[in-house]
Image: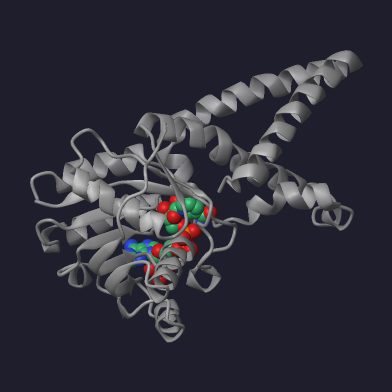
Length: 310
Ligand code: NAP
């Protein structure tokens, strides 16, 4: 993994964001802010969703300059197209837009899984004259929709780009410059490393949170359990309020890496269970001490860099 050097000012004519939700909307907000400060030069920022509701409000609030609900129509003159939709919606959108993109246009995305997206982009965009540069901002929240968008969401956070050796350097530099304008720190990673690392640090914790909250809510006393839940449970369970469709797509798209991380975790959980059965307090303390040291180290890093898991 390598951090990218500073690049020149981000300049483009027409930037289209298909999927103007939390992430796509936050990207638009951050770029508008940079534009107002004279830090970037963008002629038009266009938002495209299937429904008009959020788009109208986003235009009124100055998040976007134009909107459209027809993805194929809206990409015709686009210089850059960013796909901000759930991961399994990327392929159908690529199929819809690919014959409408102009030669030289750059397609990027913000999807939380990269292998599937890279495979789809490679299959559908090769020999079209269009460049593609997959990306993933490691920032977000359990909220969704453009109404939750924030201009500062990516400031000081990491964005991972996964270009291949065949990626057009100018296209990679453009997407890098776009994210730099949001205040994000950019990294380049291989697709497989990205999916493996994110399976462990983001996808597995979300799976555990969904599972624990569901288990507790399904108990005989059901919702009553939550009456007595304290701050720790609230912290841990926050991510179980994340969008089910988005996470459905992530887990199915990164199945193998998530199963690998889950198997490792299950084995360690089985060991903990055994320590309990054996009343082996020493082993329990050893595990807790190791975990505390790792968490303290992570917190220190977090304080230093402001980085976050999504
Ligand atoms: P979101 O808030 O639900 O936004 C998704 C947007 O996509 C919605 O505005 C939706 O509007 C639009 N959309 C869905 N299908 C579409 C289609 N076929 N054509 C056009 N627009 C479509 O989701 P999000 O949290 O921003 O996540 C978007 C992407 O970012 C996902 O790939 C996710 O993996 C990635 N990501 C999320 C986070 C996070 O923490 N949330 C962090 C990093 C990366 P309509 O329903 O009106 O079409």
